[in-house]
Image (tube, rainbow, N blue to C red; front, side, top):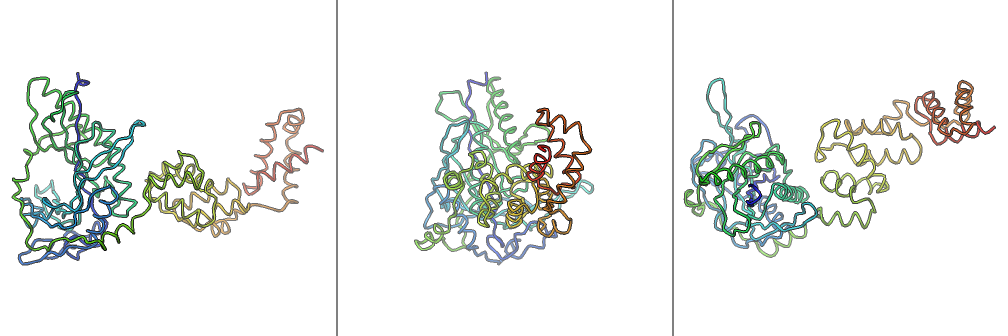
Length: 478
């Protein structure tokens, strides 16, 4: 039955901007801190305090708009969105209803090999609210205004998505664009990127939209997928049983796997918007716009094309590396220090990915330096250390970003290049393993592997396997 219905989805994506200070005052935006210590009269809504727009917020909002193909509003303003809630100190939120900073954009996504554009209705700037802290033991709630006034942009899409896969592709595209711009870290699990899903269903072929609901509290791609699939089935069940879908805001409980109604969905008139009288109009002149355009970095799509042309590494490697700005930065900086692109790619794709999985580290949180990776690759190239030792050293680089040359020296890990000592050890191994020698001489080539292994063990892994092979073959050929 569900196949006769089409899902129609639009998103409201809130992104915390990575500025040092809040949107309308000089208080710190740093995460954490004792409750109510990053506050002042402005962000706690004290009477008579006057907000002043943080220029960095406007710069980042315009940068995101340009990167998502939006038209930039050249003359705009802020509005007051009036509502009462304990974590909203002024009893209104400063936002943009009538003249959002960006309009009519689009980004391209790809799902299962098919590309399509998702239109962006608008991007507007606004302030975040505070945070309520609930104490279950005393049955009370306390409010922390540290987050109040942290700058947000809200990216409002058109209802162009038809599946959870398209939603996740769109969010991932936005995440990478914004991270590459340095506008936000976009961590869903930490709340710096939050998505509200507006979803309705209609029968396939119909043009009229169904009644939509809005789902909140979605902080992971997995939760978004489950919430969309659950809400789609809930609405289908309602229609099939002859009931109506009610326009409302619902909260998704990912642990229990269902959503529940919070309140009826408000419209703009419910908030009694009016222009904020304390803030001057926003004028984006030609000089300002050209300055922002000149700062725009190379984004992921451009980077992928350049890597293929310039570095000649596999498409799979390119996709993995460019999927994180942090990993792409490490890749390019290591190459700039003299390492070969394919060798850098190999270290990132094999050892780095393995250790990320073992230590449960996201690519965006990689803490080792390109300098130490470049030094390690150079040490392998110069045969200062062998491949086995290099993996051991890299693990220390990954976890503690140690200096590889110093670590190798202090732990006696340099490759033994004394041919006389190596030859003597190999002769002893050959003399102690006559059966393996006989097997090798009778045509069993794999027998030499055992002798190489025994030699490496005797040398405590500090010999060059290639050199061991060469000397072994010379001795066995006599």
